[in-house]
Image (cartoon, rainbow, N blue to C red; front, side):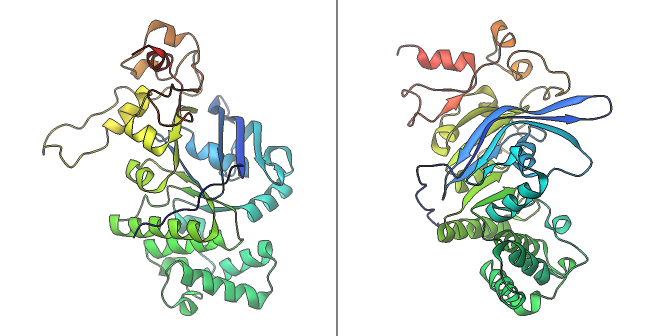
Length: 344
């Protein structure tokens, strides 16, 4: 059964503005995210898609201080919540904001959950720390959350370790942990990658149901176009640290405008494709983010590139109403922007 999400309110609940993220190694500086902006409203789902290494996870989890330990990183820009700018506060305050406003569902729940602790006490501790519950109330709340995410016999499962759960059950427990602090925004980083198709559909339906009940904003990091089509309201397409196309799902998936988005969608397997026929692929490889050049980063792989594309960075600009159902469909491509402005 399809769950209808709540109508998004007018004001964003979280906004990232002109974010730049540099990662440092002993010999190189990597521009993982380059001048990216996005926002999300209550009850809305924003999907962020792109190839591995495009900057999706760094852009989304970086401002929350959730990058792996040991990485030297420098942020510029803003990450605005109702409690202030996450990039302008201390680590302790950022942790408090993250715990109260954000819930995170990681790609691999087995590594995200503490393998040495039972599932239930991990949920209860989160509820005590950020929701202010007593020990007794936190245990009751944890059992309630396990039941809510579809885990059978939650009173028994409360005392189980993560390794005693199946992959789908661990992901449900991860969602319960993310909900324990009563968040306003749920960040889901490839939440269905390691799951089979049936369990994946169940997890997505669960997320949509929780969103409808709580009015959560969901930021979904994924490479699965099918998940985007069935889950998201808006989509942002990333390539080499930049957002190259953004808009309503209906606009971007039905009328992809940036050559990279077109290539990404063309490479998705189709049930009508004859057996043995070679799948469409985007030629070449993404650029080295430690030695970037001026201009559009997709130029070496682009079928529509002109010499001028290599000279300047195209801005993320709205398309004309002729090619889009809403004015929020934006693309970073000089060639496609000029085509959309041509008279019919």
